[in-house]
Image (tube, rainbow, N blue to C red):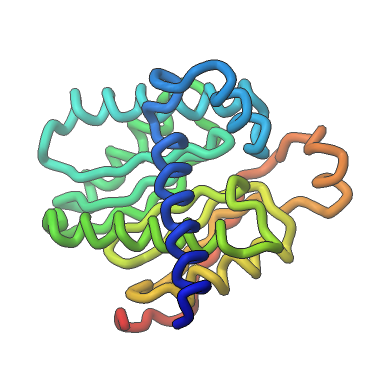
Length: 223
């Protein structure tokens, strides 16, 4: 790898880490008005929807803590009021109860329940997932034909979930990029596909149906 490529990739990784920090659930509490306004303008959700998504994640998290305590490990990601659930629960009954609890949260449009019935992951696994998320974000930042801020990236047990309001070309390109990152076992797409015309006019029409969920047909071992 050349020094120029290393510098470019390193810069992209730093940018991705900064972007991920700013787009975390705590963002509305710590960002100033100008910075938050810039991020909201870059995001393809409306400002109101972004605020709703933050509220959904907070309320759903509180509800699950009150109902389940430490018995479950659930990550809650809301995008355009569709909630992705990832993590681990002790039983199928718990999986269903978690979904119903989140569905009852105000403003939730639908739930994608990808919880696994198994023991909770280790700190090492979660740290590795965080690293993978950072590498995928860095790769998206590094791609000159994509807007990295259009995508939300979540990783659970080496499976990468991609969310966003994107065109078919952007969806395919981002999926290919994520598949090329080391240690990624599978890519699951939770995209709301929009047309180029919708992209150019700024998403005046909100989706009437939940985003479809597609994943790689086969699971490969981490490289």
